[in-house]
Image 1 (cartoon, rainbow, N blue to C red):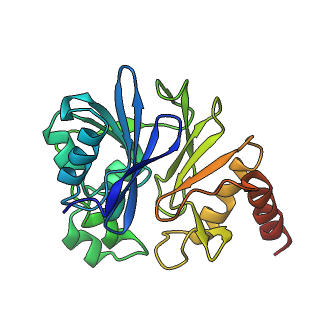
Image 2 (cartoon, one colour; image 1 turned 90 degrees about the horizontal axis):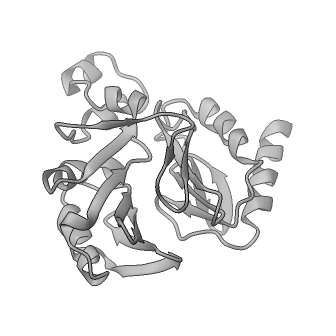
Length: 230
């Protein structure tokens, strides 16, 4: 299904592509393009069209970095893998999305069925906490479990960009924690956010909301402080 609107640049070389129910980001640099998240199953053609609008081909899509293994973020991964893109996800979510649906139903837990219905590429590369990828001058992987066991954020210190997937939300003009409904361990998800408060953030980039520019660092610190008081 096509993107809901054309890609638009939210930071130098970073393009937001709105797909059904989730955002995909294309980072266009000289040696290729990196995607952050892949949308629902069926998002592949829309991502390819967005690449074309950037003057790129599918061969230019070097890697796809997945924030977490839910269908609206990892669902398009098999389609991108099929065109030769390397797909990378935290090893904890790589294991979770390989769980058979019948096993997830027999042993239900919050979030388990969501992960079990996420399409899985034949080959998955693994991300680990502290990895630094050759993107945006060095893109650091920060493991922030709770929403899923393998949820990660991607931090680009050179540009002050923090990609948070669903670890944070930006609803009604307010920064908030991950969804209580869709998180595997909401208490852990809240605690994980503490790892982010010391970053020199200029822009928070979300899985489902417009980027937060004004007062992002201060809002994050206030959220963490409020959680501590609560």
